[in-house]
Amino acid sequence: KDESTVSITVVGASGDLAKKKIFPALFALYYEDFLPKHFTIYGYARSKMTDEELRNMVSKTLTCRIDKRENCGEKMEEFLKRCFYHSGQYDSLKNFAELGKKLCQHEAGRIANRLFYLSIPPNIFIDAVRCASSSASSTSGWTRVIVEKPFGRDSESSAALTRGLKQYLKEEQIFRIDHYLGKELVENLSVLRFSNLIFEPLWSRQYIRNVQLIFSEDFGTEGRGGYFDHYGIIRDIMQNHLLQILALFAMETPISLDAEDIRNEKVKVLRSMRPLKLSDVIIGQYKSHTRGGVTYPGYTDDKTVPKDSLTPTFAAAALFIDNARWDGVPFLMKAGKALHTRRAEIRVQFRHVPGNLYNRNFGTDLDQATNELVIRVQPDEAIYLKINNKVPGLGMRLDRSNLNLHYAARYSKEIPDAYERLLLDAIEGERRLFIRSDELDAAWALFTPLLKELEKKKVHPEYYPYGSRGPIGAHYLAARYNVRWGDLG
Ligand code: BG6
Image (cartoon, rainbow, N blue to C red; front, side, top):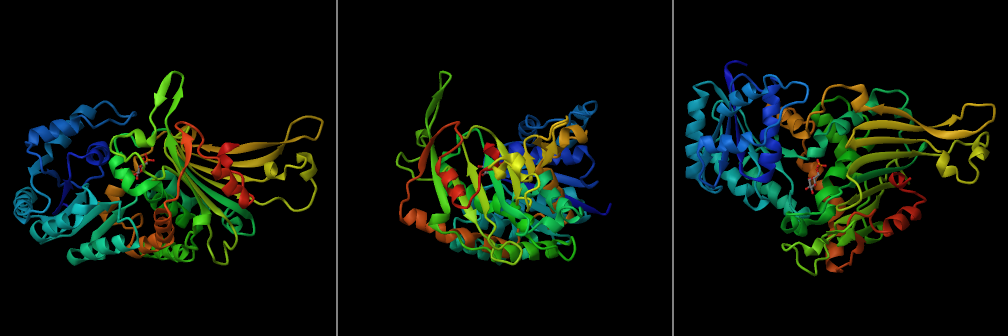
């Protein structure tokens, strides 16, 4: 291992993602001693900057782990010394060749592995990949490229992007990030299911009434309206983050934990799903709202968003998996911006206990008496199971209580950011948490007809006030399947 070196080039180094996520994650990996002994980090972007200026920019974004502050400053200095900058165009073979030369100098004759993180808009992905792979790829070790969504806007544009990338790279060189897969509780889903006897036998239509995948943010598209308006919440959150969670949740047991085995099962379940129809979905858009003397802007108040935009900032959908395990079980998704809270969670509502032994203690509202397993992905990570319990005392009263695994109380270690997990996996060549091209195709096949119909028919979103719980239509949609959203009590 000592004989090899890794060069990580962040293409689009001055962008938001690089500053907020990529450099801090790389530093955290360095801090925790996860980076190889020999490594170099390059920022690559169009603007002119010296190495010192890049270091200065990066240093402002770095934070230290709460539990280890002592030598943090020192570690930061060491880390920053390994960061460099190269200014170049994204479509210039020449500029990438110059970068390649600089990388060679750092690599000093060792086996050179090169990782390129494309933190740039998708319309320049292919150019950058063409140039990086032709002028700056490794001749002695591996070359890998990390790309981040959006992977197109529909099946056709996604397929075109895949074809474009594959002109220059093999599938195994492409690491498509869905950062939700790097979140601790999403990664834990398989552990929960497959290493606990008490869950897996219940994981089917026989015991599960419905599954809910909920994403909400308590802020709008502030500053990102231009990007967002081209995509909307269905493409931004549902088609990728929530669907990926669903696939992990619902897949059959993989043969092994090998990346191909896991992704084979995910593709299978995605391909067993029914493409969405207009009637399976409701969409919403937030409008301005004044609360406590503060006025929160509506979506179309953003200057980069057309005044007549119909782009959904909220959507709720019912999805079905037509296989033996899940036949008839609604998987309800809900995703929205500018809602009352920030939260991502999975809710599994179980069926009623058959018979009538204790059901009468719950009166007519049997829904209140069923078990519910909640996996709170963020914030304040937790897994809890709602059970019925006897209220202590001489009478016979039952109430619902939680068996609670609260991460902050159970584990003292801070949870790493998703980007740390994913960058480390990309460096180590572990593909389990990255999206394979057939997964991507299957995900688009599910959503593309719906997205086209919404746009063709110019379906109007239901408006909801900034900071509210979203449009009422989400309740009607759920009620159609006899479901009550668990997050609303
Ligand atoms: C991104 C979306 O993929 O995920 C954003 O483009 C969203 O719109 C973000 O805000 C949410 O990520 P997280 O990790 O903050 O929940």
